[in-house]
Length: 206
Image (cartoon, rainbow, N blue to C red; front, side):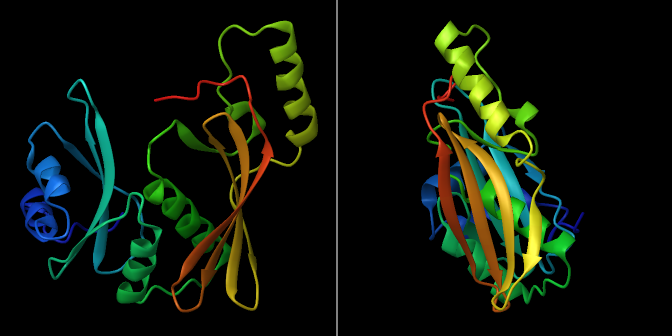
């Protein structure tokens, strides 16, 4: 795990860095009820990503933010271009398929919007089905297991002329989604998605 840019007070530095960029997020970070969990990203130099969660009702919030050693802060949630900016500024070089897979999964985790339940899956068994299914819903579940049980796997990277392309699978709402996340040599990250199954009998809200 990378060392926090300021282990003594990451909360204060994040709040200060976010004040002009996103005052709402700065207030969320400043709230002592908000937990800040560093994200494991050993490939990232000079920056630390944090998973910030506040469970205070009636509207729990979660946001991913990043802080540089120089005190610059970025909101990553819902801002995929900010992730690319961070990689470029950090001078990240992806030299292996393993690192490419790690970058892609952190990118997908941190850039999602949390407007609906969404999560990565490494196997078809990771899909969270509803506890009670009708006969038709059982057929829908069995069809997905049969069609994609051998295809869904942990993030897998292949080198390409642009850099690396990583296949990642997620559940987004009630959809099964296949991602092709490309990490270019320049640090730019893009994501191409394919919804392969819809209206699955899964919980679709947070």
